[in-house]
View (cartoon, one colour):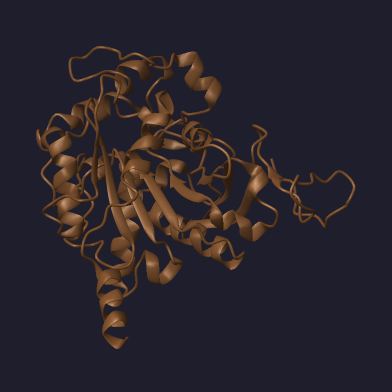
Length: 365
């Protein structure tokens, strides 16, 4: 899995088309990226985390150029490769960084504990460290995206930083956060989650893995039913087959069962993770992308999420994506639709601290 960063010109190095610098680390699936060794999830529990680089590699002449890539956080039971189709749809001149969480893709297994020992707070701890280590390499992405559970992790990280008197912008210089089909925090009403019907469903797919502990696993043959059906229960056009999902490496073995219960406020967790009102009023602009045929989160719920996090009652940067195929996993069943939705909303804005600073500068002039 690991190939060390070597001096340019060393025997067996892989040189980039645009220049001569350091070699990539290469994942087990052949993906170029950066291996971050011993990322700490819990005290004494570490994982070698692989940050995959998808999209146009010709734009990267030196390691710091990775900062021009977007940083994307994958969802629960997904792997980083679920962002590859989106990265490819962005086209020439664009790239995406996405770290595989443990026991999937190109990352390793926990040392000092089991996958089943981890929860969402541990994932946030790791995400913080991943961003910190990238920044230490002069890799400073300006945009962070989070899909599904990944959207919750982005909210949780921002909340943690705000509680510390910081923010995504102040700590990591992130200008843009984009939540894609994001799960909802405790403060936003959620019909499916608040119905009490999820506990039985989650427990039905609980597995006591002898190596990795208690996990939530969705067999790949059931993915069309879970992720590619519309509000009428029909599999949509463009749905991927189980064979295509496995070939693409989009799926993971599973997630810690306790993390999935925590995400949904079930299984002994009294509520879902919290994200405070007006959480994105600093310099990081927030957009919320929602899908018309998403069976997990309704359009109106995603709009409420956006308004809660920004205070923008006019929903300037809330982006509903409409169409017969707009299911929860649109990013890899029809990634161009997501690219187009983000591009079409590029000019959106709402009052936040950056606007106040601009006004102060104008007053000084």
